[in-house]
Length: 532
Image 1 (cartoon, one colour):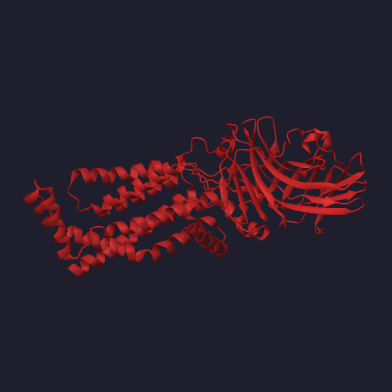
Image 2 (image 1 turned 45 degrees about the vertical axis):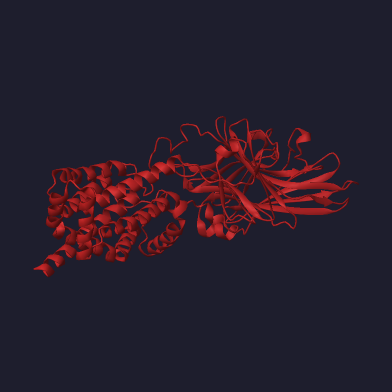
C-alpha cells in the first residue's frame, strides 16, 4: 500500500506543478513606470536594394542600411528543424513576424532622433562581407554624412566562431557646433507568434519562457513577460552596467551595456499592442567642434551556451532558463557534460547519470523497502485494530500510531525517496528542455532528438512496462482488489502522460526503473533471507 500511496503523491505533486507552471505569472520587476521611455524607431523598412550581408563561420547578418539595424540573423551551425538543410533564422523581418536588433544615436544631434522622421541612410563599399579563414576579425564600416558635415561611422566587428558582435560608433564633428548625443540599443519582437511558429501551442509538457529579461548593477537576472509590456507596465531602470535580452527556448539575443560612469537607462515599450521592445539608452556625451568620439556596445545573437555567454557579460549565462530548480539543474548539466566528453553521446550520458543518481539515492531506496517490509509484517495487527475500533476513528488512529511507536516504524519513511526523486526528475526536465547542447542530439536508432518526444512512442511504452513490473512486485502482498486495480492503472496513466515528454527524460526514467527493479529484488531477497 505504501508504494501506491507514494505513486499517488508523486503524480499529484508532479501534475500540480505542471499545472501551476503552465498558468502562473512569471515574476517581474517592480521598477516600472507608466511612461513612454522607448525609442520611436518604426520607420526602418526592408529594402533589398539597401541591405548588406555580413557573415563569419557561425552567423550571417542582414543589415538594413536605413539606420544600420540587424533585420535578419541566421545561425549557420544550427538547423531550423531536424533533418532540415536550412539554418535557423533567429532574427527576421516579415509580414507576420518581426524580430530585430536596432541601434543608433539619439539626443539633440543624433541622426536617429525621431524628429528627423527617417533613419540615416548609411553607405558601404560592398554589399557582402565575409570573414576569411585566416582572418582574426572582420570589420565592416558603414558611414553617413549629414548636412552639417558630421561624419557618423558605424562599424560591425565579427570574430571567428563567435556569436557576440561589437558595434562601434565613431563620430567626427567637422561642424562648428558642440554635439550632444546618446546611444541606444533595443530589441523588437512581435508578441503573438504566428501558428506555424508557435511550437509550444497545445503542448502540455514543453513550456519554456519566451519574453524579455535584463540584468543591472543591482539585479543579476530578472525576467519580464511580454504580457507586462503589453499591459503598459514599463521598465525604467537606471544602471551603470548590465544587459537587456529577449529569450526563447535554446536561443537568446542580448545587448550588453557598456559600463558608464553615469547611468544607462533600461526601458520597455509596446508598439501597436503587438510588438514588444526592450532596450537601453546610454548617458549623454558631448563632442566638441573638430574632435572625434567613439562609443561602443556589444550584442549576443546565438545559442544559449552558458560557458561562452559567461565570458561575454556577467550573469548572461543565467538566461539559460532552468526554472526554480536551477541550483540542481546547473550541476547536473555540468556532470552530464563531463560524461558526454567521455562517451561522446548525450543519450549514453543520460544513462550514466541515471546510474550515478540511483547509486547516491540507494540508502533512501533501501530504507523505503525496509519500511515497506515492516509495514507488511504489521498489517495483520493493523487489520485487527481496524476491526476492534472501526467505529471510533480517533481511537483507531491512536492505536495504530502507538503500534508504530512500539515497533519503531516511521509511517512516512517510505515517502522520503519520492520527495527526493521529484526535484531530481524536475531538474532533469528543465535541463533537457533548456540546454541547447541537447537540441537535435541523437541517441540510437530512431531517437534523433533527445530534447523532443519519441516519434514512435516506443520509450514511453517501455517506461510503462518497467513501471508495471515495479508496481506488481511491490504490491504482491496487497489483498485489496481496489489497490490491485490502481496498481494496474497507474502505469497506463504515466505512459500516456510521458508520450509528450522529451525522449531523454523518458530514457532517464526507463533506466531508473530498471535499476529500481534490480535494487528491489536485491533488497527484498536480503530481507527475506535475514528473516528466515
